[in-house]
Image (cartoon, rainbow, N blue to C red; front, side):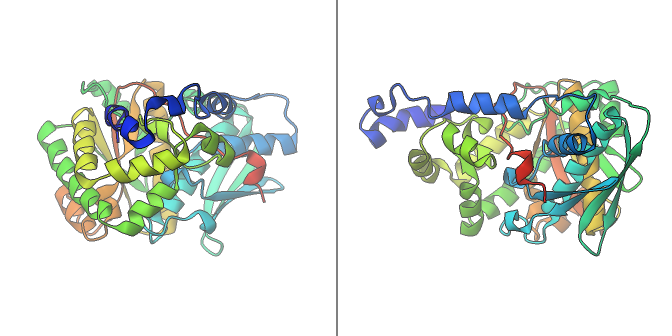
Length: 364
């Protein structure tokens, strides 16, 4: 669904636009909530409990699949532990919880960067017994990074970019940010190669769009109105994808009319062809510890991109459809390994961000 299609169909659905006249569908409420969520907080003078709570707030600004915020945080003496919240898993799109553990890694990276600015050295380690990420904290000289301020600006920008290439120096900066000893990142920028990636995106998207469980799961996490976005504090706000903000009942109806394989494939073709390139992240091993490391590398890449005015968005269909993943790996030249994430990037407009739940809701 796009705004043009929506405006054309609306009168027939509701008997005329006056039904919605004078109603902003919670947009004003949403804007106030967004300003509170997406901010850089106080960095000095915090005591232990308040400092740890502020670190958790920064961690929750990380991305997660469908913005489910599939994490919980335990505050210990000298450490913060990030635990998976399996009640917020997405079994249709993420049956083996790969994206869930990637999300824990994204949150961990935010926490590490924020801790440095607050005068703490943060050392993450994965605890296989509890499937958690323990981040040990100890005093150190404060080091504020530009990546910290990027946290309040980073978003998964699900829209068209300007199609212009990045400079070799910019690509080199992104490569350094997204590559670690345990994560390899492939930067794809040649147009013929991006067209081949698009073919895999379309194949994967078609499979998912014909999977009722996938469609139902996605719809359940879309927040069509600003009121619902603020009330729940999670999920994908419709405006974040450039879609109209409408009452939930109407959004659900329009979703059923316009969310079709052809419409979505056409949309992704525009998205991909407007992008400067694609980054593919590949962990050194296919296990939860490395999925966390992939999340850390991906978040650092996204934050570095944000400091450069570059937008990012996930196009994970080639790695989410299990039958397609080995073919995509072969295309990339990484046979026998698992491509973990696919991220397109380029310069484009900022869209309204999705929200986050209150910090206290995720601390156990």
